[in-house]
Length: 418
Image (tube, rainbow, N blue to C red; front, side):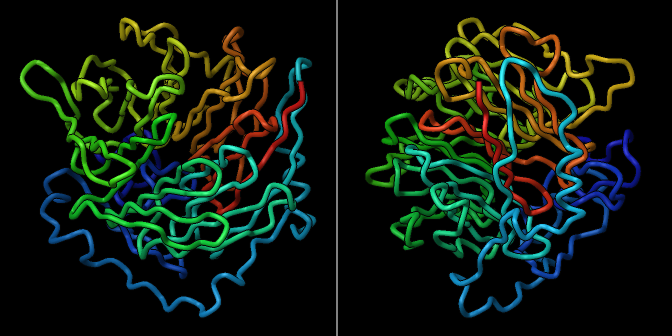
């Protein structure tokens, strides 16, 4: 694994940020304990050997500061309290729109801590709540009915919360970099269940459409399948014999939206692996998607992938034969700036929005929306955001909105009208 990217200014630490703020970081700092002072490891890791020889994940990490006694009273500041300069910057974000629909900025939320990053966002099934997972180990639950006011604050871990998923309308599941898998009551923040994958920092989580099964992925290169009722492991899904599995960290797992028996995973090894949940076996794979975040999504006969690289970032494969269908034209005009993709998702809404998909990333920190029927160029674009777009989530059809979790600690929500 090549940890130093020659295409960027400054060296990149595999568990931290680049030491040059002008260039994108390959991986968010999910391994270190939450740190309200904003410190990051600055020592570059030059190769895999030096990383593997480290004593443990916790060695040398910054000790977490004492948390405030009344965390639930910490509120997130809405866009109304943004400075005049911030509001002016927001107006500059829209590069272009398409006459097929309009998209308007609804609301922003501020992070709990000054140096927090938002690694994952997800709407509840009824689109009433929006959950955001932070690098500081917290989860914020926002009420969409009340202008994104905070409903509950959850202290989930001393390490970064890397992924959140709703189980129905009221229960929320999360995974974190200390290997914890937790279930919460979203409205109150009460812990309902927790289990742990020891010595395996977890980076991703997904639930089947009926929420009866969930899958996790992380540093150990193995997808684990769980029974959500008993919270017991069903199977470790990994390659063997003539079945090619993962050879590096897994950053995304995704159940098919209409078929809970079909599961996919992707990560650093630039391979997307597909599984039959009933057989508990690998059934196929696609090459060429270098996934470093929540950038894997299946819908219909296709899988959308986003890669953290400068060229051919967005690809669509056919899951019937595992072949590449199309590479989306990111640089549709001369000298167009590029973005290194962390997140990608198909729209979950019906009607006119059914054919849309969104992509976000770092470097110039772009967020784009495409129409599946017109992939020669995007139909909406925001760029030069203050932080990378780590996660994207469309609403489930009750409303037509899309949210993005960003490296500047903001959760941005946009409303789409066709």
